[in-house]
Image (tube, rainbow, N blue to C red):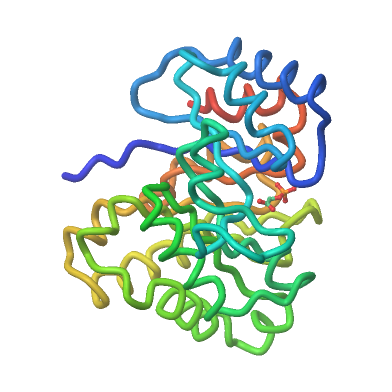
Amino acid sequence: MTTRKALMAGNWKMHMNAVEGCRLAADVAAQCRGYDDREVLLAPPFTILSEVSHALEGKGIITASQNVCWEEKGAFTGEIAPNMVKDAGCSAAIVGHSERRQIFGESNGMINKRVKGGLAGGLLIILCIGETLEEREADRAFTVLEEQLRKGLDGVDGGQMEKIVIAYEPVWAIGTGKTASKEQAQEVHAFLRGLLGRIYEKDVADTTRILYGGSVKPANVNELMAQPDIDGVLVGGAALKADSFGSIINFQ
Ligand code: PGA
C-alpha cells in the first residue's frame, strides 16, 4: 500500500504584517508535535516571506508563496519569479487558487505556465482546482475539474509529478463556512486520482497528494482526513489563529 505523507497547509491570503506573521509562525511551530506522518506548510503574503521563513528556520515547516511567475526576471510588474521565492527562503508555491481565477481572471493557460515555471525553478507546486456552485448545480463539476487538471498539468511529465500537489477547493466552500461533506470531497478526490492514473501511470496516481480546501476547521478535519483519498488540507480562515490551525495540524 502506498503511504502518502499528509500535507497540512495554511494560506494566509492578504493578511498579516511582519510582526503578526512572525508571531503566528512561531505559535504554529510551537503547536507542531513532530509527527512524522505529516508536513506543515505556511503561505504568507509576498512582503513577509523572508521574515517568516527566517523565523521558521530549523522548525521543519515549509514556506510557500501564494503565486509564482513563469519568467525568471524582467518587465512583469506585480509578479514574483521562482528564484525570488527561493531567495525568500521558500521551497513551494500555490498556483491557480480560485481567488486568482475568479477575481483576477487567471486562465488555465496562464496557470499552466506558472506550474511549469515554478517546477523549472525547483519549487514544489500546489495546483488548486475547484468548481463553482453554478457548475456543480449544472452537473458540470467533474467536467470542469478534469479540464482544470488536464490544462494545468499540460506538458508536465510523470517524473515531475513528485513536485506537484493537487488541492481540490470547491469555490462554493471557500470562506463561506460551507464545507463539502466528507462523501462529496472523497468522491471528487477519488475521481481526480483516477484521472491522474489515466493521464500518467498508476504509480503517479498513487503517490500524488491531493489536498482538500474550503472551510476546513478543527471540527471537520478529522472526518476529512479519514477519507482514503484526502491527503491533507489547504486552510484559509482557520489558519490565521495558531490554536485553530494547531488543532488542524494535530488531527487524529
Ligand atoms: P477557507 O479558505 O479555509 O477560508 O475556506 C481556503 C482557501 O482558500 O484555501
